[in-house]
Image (cartoon, rainbow, N blue to C red; front, side, top):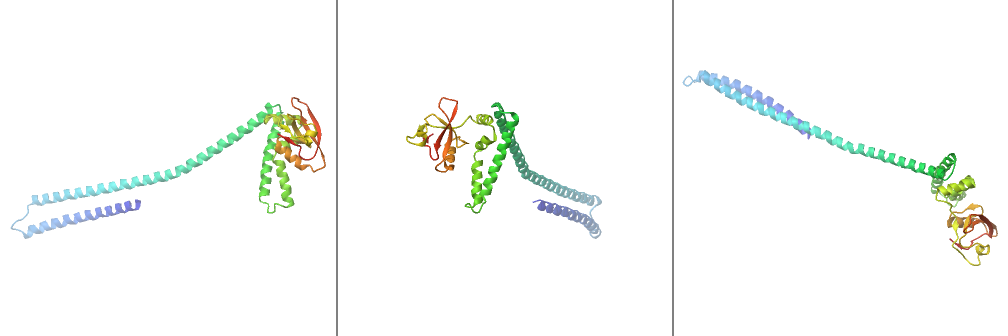
Length: 283
């Protein structure tokens, strides 16, 4: 559109030049013709006043035409300038969403970082409020973050392993099993007192509550009762039935397993011994 406007301006300017030139030629020829007519038409010659009146009228017509052409040029110029401004505005408006989008993404990233920091600070404060030493609480958070990274790395390695039945795959599965339960890791990294504070900060102590004992099973024969809680099995801390089932499967048949329990209504713990295999409890 700008090219067409520019072309129109050039054409108008050329027209103005031609028109002025034509008018000049017309005035010259008109004067010559008038003079010649005066010489050849002695019978009806134009007076000097008449010739001056004709020239003044033609000059007025010429001035009017020139003014109209100049107004047209000015109008085209304003229109072209307006379109240039519109194009600039369109380009600026096209860029604005991009800038706005970048700003929005930056703000969203800031919000995510702020929330992550608030969450981490709240975890640290919970450990401290539970009674853990601040430096040890910081140690727990750093270990947790590293633990999560290692779990992600192991998952990535196992996902891209070609042979899932190889020895390497088996080792990775074992590592993934360990890294799927950070509480088990902290049960070995922390002292018993610190570990209890860790559990308290994360929802309190968690054990398997026995709701029912199946008659004539290892649990029944060992004296377990409904209401008891299993704290550990074969030296491994138990937090839910999934943990217990996993630990039971790890011990081969024919073994004797130590089970740490807490009796209903008591804060004391005791250890009983059961044969390896399913216990016969419902939680």
